[in-house]
Length: 199
View (cartoon, helix red, strand yellow):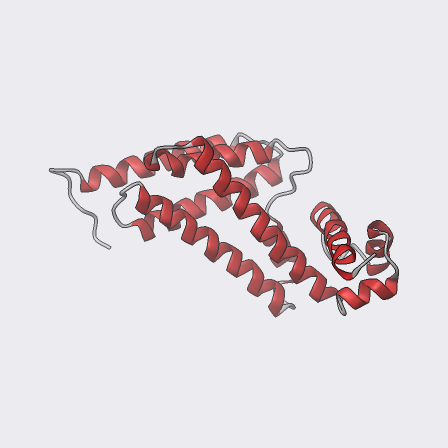
């Protein structure tokens, strides 16, 4: 087994175990066993647990945002429909049997106060999501896309957290309804005869 294969197997194991059970409850020996690599190989790939945690989060960020963007592009051809498609994707995700909420909020809650690396990766993920939602609002020709993007971001995180805590995927539908009203209000504010909101 070469270095790249070992690294992939370790990250696969970390993603399953960390996301299912949390980071602090999973030890390196269990990760080694699940990945099917030697402890020596594990530490060659990731010299410390925090290196593995940060790598796991960065890979999950890329996969998560790529999956979201692909769904939105495929299911919402019209730019004005794309912000709401985000919540349809969330609903699909919430119904998955392995859904455990936001890996970045979970990790920040566990380690954000003691790990600068985890806090940084979590913030970078949220900033990237905010940027994506802002771009969707801009593409939909919504006025003040930065403000609307921020509001959509709060709805997304609220839906994820609510669905994780309650086990009810309908949080995505409720957030979608709120987002629909938000977007309609933003369009009305800049329509002919409407009053533009102050920044």
